[in-house]
Image (tube, rainbow, N blue to C red; front, side):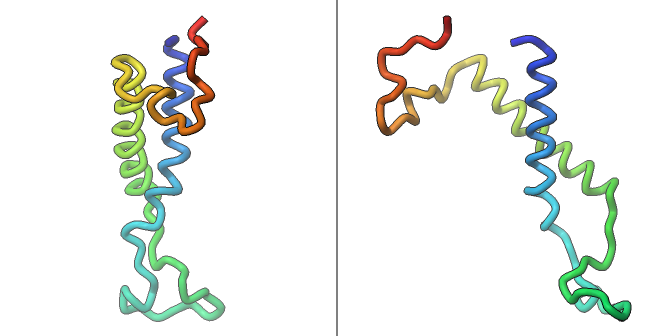
Length: 95
């Protein structure tokens, strides 16, 4: 795999990880014990710390990407292992 392909896959994992990480560690104003601003939704987060979120997302994305690259290299899980209909049987897509 070319390094540009690996980098593109890493960015896809990073973008996916944002949606996975965002809900964790969020406190509403009620949970934080502070007064809400008039018109604020009850579910709105009390504080938004983009640096902390970016660090968490980077850690999760790096772990997932490393597992993907190790699987790509060593072939732990192949399409044939997870294909319930057998569409991959007997077909060589490697070229």
